[in-house]
Image (tube, rainbow, N blue to C red; front, top):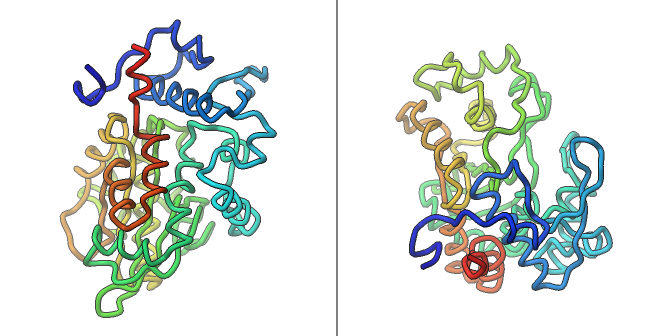
Length: 320
């Protein structure tokens, strides 16, 4: 019996975790298995184990990190071409864009490198990106014209949110009837949706009301975990649309189907939204389904690589 048979990941024995240097007492069920998965992938690739600085300022070796030399060589990425794309994106990032380069290059568990491994091949092949997103979003996409990483339509812009909220990825598109469309995307992997929340600002309350996205724009649950990041990002997308940057768009979360905390947050957030057709829509796509769509768009190698690294837990099952 395996994860596929049960529809859920196993509780991994602590001895197994210690054997692979991934025993972390604060990890939840998904994060534990995902951290082990990344360590097993690193071992299979022959990449050296790295270290990180804990909350007490001490350096600890851990199996889900890469040693600096391997990280600098692009070991966290699908290919030398994608690693080169990442370096260019970091070098030419938008003013105010927050790239945590330590996490991006060394942390195997982070959703930052996953984002580039998912969308880097699509940025390099906009025809494939168009085929993929035209199928997923036929009302929004006739052609994908640009893919932007760590993008905001205006950091600290008072006409938007006046802060540093951004999207992992934004696709600029030409929609049906030549409408200006966008798809703003947040990628999650092992996150719990309980990351440190942003400082609440009066502008958030104004945007919550004027966005017309929410049944009760003053609901305190929108301003706290696990919903606060989705609330801010969705507002940012809609405020950019209302400002006239785009005619239509969607805000979408991509996350593994086996990470129940993200799925639960998405369902909770959806319950706060108006059912309306003239606002930025909200959606959720499982990582597994998105990878299948990448394959259907013709990027077979990229899809197989991402699936093997991030979605295939058969080697974790084999250790149970």
